[in-house]
Structures are given as C-alpha cells and as structure tokens.
Length: 307
Image (cartoon, one colour):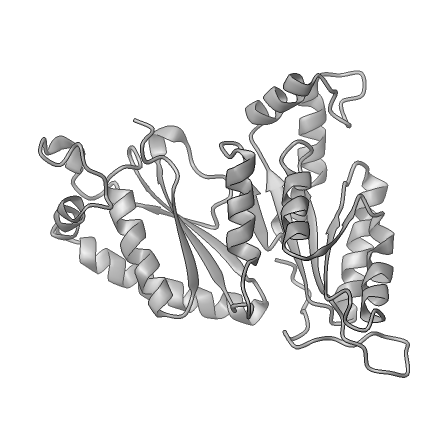
C-alpha cells in the first residue's frame, strides 16, 4: 500500500467545479505482460464496469473527472495500464498522487506470473515480449518485472496466474468484485504445499509443518484436510488449537490496521509439506474464524489433489 493517506470510503467530490459531483469507483489493472490483464478487464466489464484499455496514465484523473460529470451513468471505472517505459511509470505515479490529493478512493489490481509461465505463453502465441528488444523473452520479462516492482508493492490485490486458466482467473475476479455493498476487508485463505513452492501473491505465510503429518497414518492418508477424520486428528495434536487461537488473534489486530490504512484485500497462505492435510484443515478453521469476525473470506486449496 502507498504510504500516502487516502480519503475515507464515502464518495469524493470533483475538484474545480461549483457543484458537488460523485466520483466513480476506480480500479487500475496492471501487471506483467502475458499475466492476464485483458481477462481481468473483461471480467470487470461483464460485471458492469466501464473499462478503458491502455489509457495513458496521465489521463486517468481526467477520466475520473469525466465519470463524475456523467450524472451517475459511469459509477465504476476500470483502467488497464500497460507500463512499458520509465516515462509511463513516472506519469502513472504522478496520476496516483493527484488522485490521492483529491481524496479519490482507488484500488490497484496487479497481475503477475512466474518467468516459466510467461515464457510459455509468449512462445505459444509466437510473439515477442514488448520489452525484449533485440534480446530474449526472459530479458524482456526481467526488465518489466524490475520496472513494475514499486507498483506491485503498492497494489491492493496481487493475483498470481501462473497456475490459473482463464476460467479460474475470472472466478478470482468475480470473488473479489461481485457484491452489493463493498466489505471493509476481503481475505483469501490459501492452503499450499511447500514442495510445490511458496505462493508469490501471499501477504502472510503460515507454516503448519510443526504438527504431525497425517500422511504417515495409513487410514488417514487417502483423505484430505476437509474431512472430519483428518481435521480431528490435526486439531487433537498438542499446540494445534493454541496456534489457531493465537494466530486468529494476531489477524484481528492486523485486520484493524488494514481497514485503517484502506487495504481491502489480504491473502493468507497456510502451508504444509504437500498441501493436502494439515494446511487444508488449518485453512478451513482459520477461514471460519475470519468470517465470524466480519471478514469476507474465500478459501482456496492450491495444491490439494496434485499428489
């Protein structure tokens, strides 16, 4: 999140007019080339957002002002920003500062993927990376990742599409943006297996490998952490319930700070060795705790079924 203070969640007013105008919601979609920006934008368009693709960053405040003058006809704007040069990035930073100064509530969705996934996608369509120049695809990816590093750090929502197909990405976008009243905070609780790598879009990572592994109990091995048999085994182990209680308390403290700072999305990754038993059981219980605290929660089991 940016360190600059944003306005409250109530509608902002347009600057430089004699009348009070309701400023539309604004989402900025950016990220790595080939990571799914167009799919994310199409999803918002299907949800009724006014989507502008490849808008020069300097024109974003102008677009917001035009939306404010539309008499409510343009209530939600999504802008796809393709940052391919330092000049464009500097222009985007100036626009974001301008929006913050005016008290406009904006959110940044950042799409990314692993180098291997991006290389495969570019090779499958036989197109060069926009920043590779005379070099290789991996050179363009490295240059773009370095250019976007600061923007990724400011993002409200980071989605790693390395292992997602188009339908799964749309489901993630729907889960985040389909609602009536906007909740204060949305959480994704994701179980994963360390042997398959850390989720790169995680804000917090929890390690459950200190608990005995049900994999080594023959009668439990075929089941997953969603079953009562495995969950009962996991939470009957010394320290399991205490760990859940203490971490849930810590998340309450963190959630309060996120709400205060205007951060709307958080991804909590819960890991065990294979992502089948302990992490799944812990994720399910943790999600219930968060939901009971008023946090809109989605549970994703990234690696369950991969073994």
